[in-house]
Image 1 (cartoon, rainbow, N blue to C red):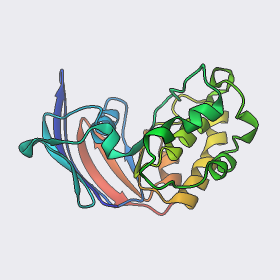
Image 2: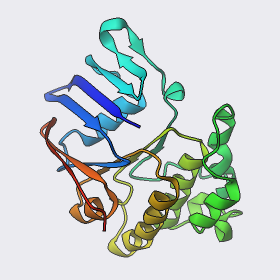
Image 3: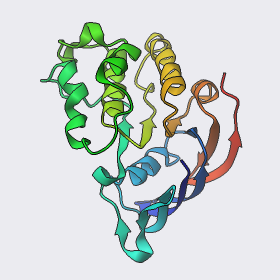
Length: 220
C-alpha cells in the first residue's frame, strides 16, 4: 500500500504543511511533542479536515479539497490506537474486542478472533472489565480491537507513551509479533528513537509541522 499526502492545516498559531509518500509497511512519524504528529494522524483518519490538500491510498482518493472529496472515517477503514486505550470501561475485554467488528462486516478479517487473542496474550483477560486492567493490558486490548475492526491501515499514536518502562518492555514484543504476522500498513507515531529503530521500515522526521527527512531502516 502506498500512502500519499499533501496537506495544509492551521489550528491557532500552529500550522501543518506536510508532503509525504509512505512505502512502509511500517512508517514511523518521529518528532518532539507539538511537532504535529497527532494532527497528521487525525487528518489521515478523517477526524480533522485540513484547510487544503489531498490524500490518496493506493489508487483511492480519501481527500481532495479542490474537488470537494472527503471520505468519512468509517469509509477509510483505519484501525486507530491512541496513547491511552479509550476502551469501554463497563464492557468486558471480549466485548471491547468485538465492538468494531459490527461496523466492518463487508471487509475481510485479518485473522480469526482466537488468533488475535492468542497473539496478544488476551485469553486470561476476556471476562474482565477493562477498568480493572493495567495500562499495558489495556493497550493490548486496544490493539486487538483495532485489528479486529478489519482495517486497511493502522494508525498508532504513541501507544506506549503513557506506560512506564516495565509496561513498555511488556508491549514491545507484542508489536514485534503483529508486524511479523500481519504486515498491515501502519503509521506509527513516536518520539522514542528506540521504538522507531525496533519497529519501523522507514522513518519520517517531523518538526514544527514540516517533514524534514525520510529514510529507510532495517528493523532490529
